[in-house]
Length: 260
View 1 (cartoon, rainbow, N blue to C red):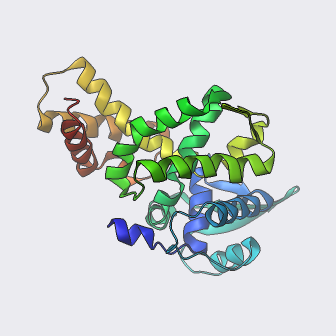
View 2 (tube, rainbow, N blue to C red):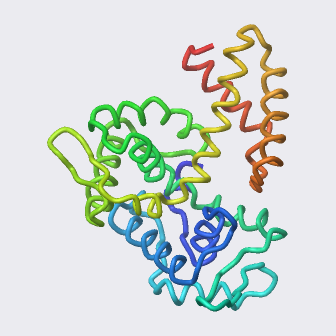
């Protein structure tokens, strides 16, 4: 699976799906969507996940037009006095998560970097690395990421420097990064979906803290029930958010790390 992910095929459908599912109401203005698609392309070109990833060689406009021309996908154009809005129908959201999930591993590190920097606004480089190293083994196990420790350090540095600093959103100082433009959140590369992964981890860890002696089966069941409830309350359309198998993998990873 690691090698399959290294050879991911990025296309119009999974990029448009990623952008729309990352928005609050599964909708963006045409201009916002095109800008988001452009930022995805730049990231994947500037900080490649691997040399085997296949990237689209068409413009964001061409990608959007291709998706709009497809039948029964649920991506619609609506017009108002201010322009055009591209919207994903609620009934098509679950289907679109399939396309998004095929490439979500490409964006998990960039969005994690974005999440940490947005939270602190200014952070020392070594603290940023340390925070990501702590969560990385769990992401690696779930998403089959291929980076070893040295490669991870290089990838994080390239994400911060080559892409984010280049957009004048972030200043690199001698030992830290400083957020200088709140538009940085717009370039957070599917941050909402990656937060859902972290929320699942938080559910399990919180239950463990309250019930240290809980059995594996009960932990998986209770984690799943809480996740199902949160998915209804907060409109989370991704089936994997409350997938019992995902909680099982997390438990095994915690056990191997001798954290249980």
